[in-house]
Image 1 (cartoon, one colour):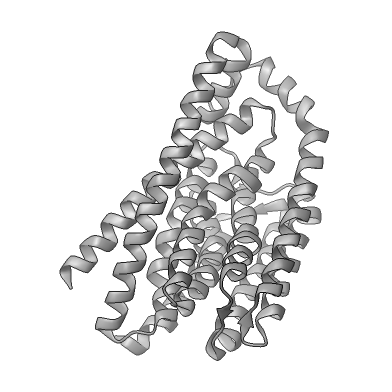
Image 2 (cartoon, one colour):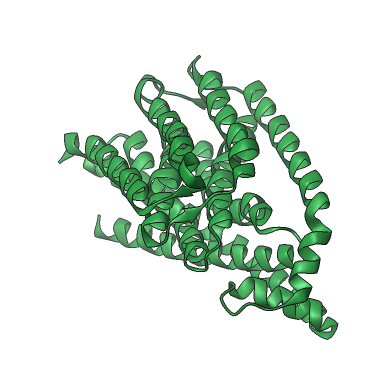
Length: 335
């Protein structure tokens, strides 16, 4: 059994390195082409940090562990809002733009409600998956239009000055604009990070699923609980690392964008694609408890962010406290 915990830890470590490489490469490339930070958070950073969930779910679905797969998605979405935004806000209050609350937040809430509705019959079918994938294309189309509307403005801003307080990715993006001779080298370097990250993510995901299933069977803990706790927290660590770094570099909009985008992609991309490959069974406990908890945390985000368009340290503490309470509820019956 000790070996399985070691394998799980190694898989998690490989997963984290893979996500870091993927996010690093994708973020620098996106900023290099003039995409504003919120959109970077909603797309490339969110996609990179959602890849662990996708690979975990794909591996779990292939091996028939539907509870582990759905638990991972629902648990990750809860952790992204409660744990990640909470921890980031405690480190540094997060500024949230009014536009994000008017445009991107309603999309997130609508997708979470749609996910719950599609699951009420006890299965996320291939047709349900197709509906989610179509929703993904619609969301990406919206982001492309938004990016085109803001691209020139961001390029001008990147070309004007280099702020030493900005993240390394933005500084490097500015340098490549100022010095065209660096452009080709930077692009190929970041492509290398992206592909290396993808390979590491695949290996880490497989190790984590194999060991998590074995540990759950040995401890006589339901797969849904393992997915909601250990696996969900593990696959949310890339989002946590990315969001904390954004918060420390005073990129609150990218932090919020990363969380909103990750939750959207977890449902539209991960659940949509995996359920089209193989329909996912949804247990009654998830429908009565875990899905509602996910929606409650999503709803709670609006009033917290709406006050002064900021998530304060106190509000971050409220999110963290709620998450700890939920974890205690899940684990207590098996202690």
